[in-house]
Length: 276
Image 1: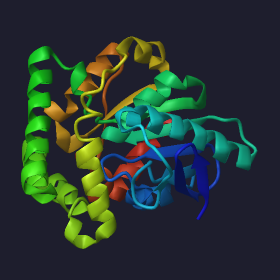
Image 2: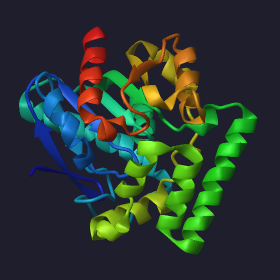
Image 3: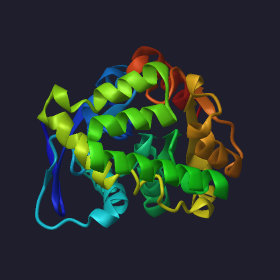
């Protein structure tokens, strides 16, 4: 398995298929393994890059870290990974980028800070609460702070119950709880603790440069799950879609449709990519 050495970290990644580069950016789990079920069908058309974000799973941290700038470092890491894989493959240093949940927030910032390396940015339900009207923004911040308080007082599993109860239901909720169930192993436990401590509040409450996104609007494809409806979790996606004057494209499943309906999700994503 190849690794990319960057400042302060070693980032492992997997490659599937041949063709134009397609970088998949995971959300809360932080590990590329979650995309393996959709990477195979996508690899019939693309060179699919799955990676473990800094601090998660097989990645390794070296020396002092700037945990208050994790979002910026994630975007920089994504840029460096695109450049590295492109150079190795003899391609131009650019890629189609798909990000989901907090991974979509990373994709947004990658597009703003490093637009030259992004040919298309597919943003699947980024929980960018700062894009919402003040009252909903405050409600979102209050919910995240409440969940963080439960995490510190009662542990990650109790906090995950509160998180899924506030943001998701049904198959989505069960898949998300299983993904963070630390009784399944030390790696999942470490990922869960890392996410609660350093990402739960920082990424959704980070400021979004909507004007900069609009400038790159031709590259943006706003995405949401069919089962997600137009609820609060899709609110930021609707705001972005309106700003760049595009419709929200729908994919099978809900917030984690790539887990609950991987085959349908991959097929839907390929169709959207073909249209764009």
